[in-house]
Amino acid sequence: MESLYLLIPLSLVLAFVIGAIFWWATRSGQFDDMEGPAHRILMDDDSPRQEEKEE
Image (tube, rainbow, N blue to C red; front, side, top):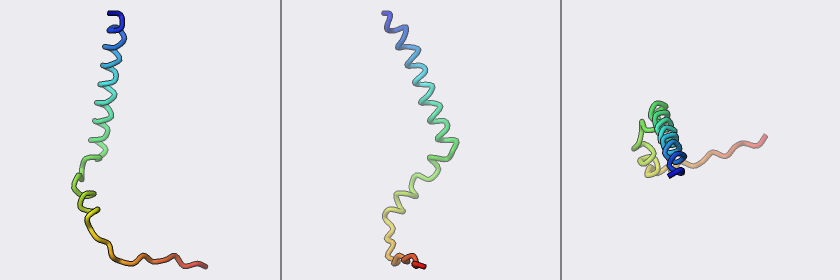
């Protein structure tokens, strides 16, 4: 029973921290473009790379 006095507040703090991190992620635009990276990986980029000129 004594462990509940530690575990319940600890779980509430952990839930608050997870909620705060999720809130920060949504406010900073982490979930704005969910399809862009998926489409970008399928695009084929056949243009040759330009080598850096040595001086």
